[in-house]
Image (cartoon, rainbow, N blue to C red; front, top):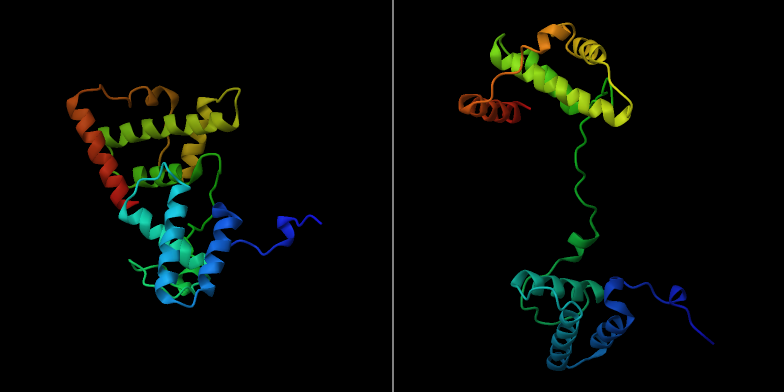
Length: 202
């Protein structure tokens, strides 16, 4: 009668297959420590040969020994050539990545646009602030078109910008055309400086 894999014992690391798992299970039954060590090293050689494109580095070898420990349920008593993962490390849940909380007014713009507008609101009036506002309107148009493939009205962008900033940034269509500076070496250096300051603050 055919025995299906679905009815067999679940493999800890299926990528190595059931044949390698059987080798590991056999190594656990070897009483002689020296022979058990030789068996483990042979299994590592076989595991390494299953991934010929992987570079033979200390980190790669360490991963193989980690996998051997996992497949033996951390019960294989041998002299590992390196420090392997502990059972506690393998079973404990990963550290949860903190998620930024808070509502986004318009999700199609995203939180990054909100932060850019907040940063612009704190800047002093002048060429740099005007340039940043111009960049913000360009970014708002781009992300708006991802949601509305047809068209985007500039007045809609300006209204949303006014709402986001709480009325602190109120521009007209004729004004936005004067915001774009001439591209020169100084403007590019100032742009890089603004980006660094924005990353540090936000």
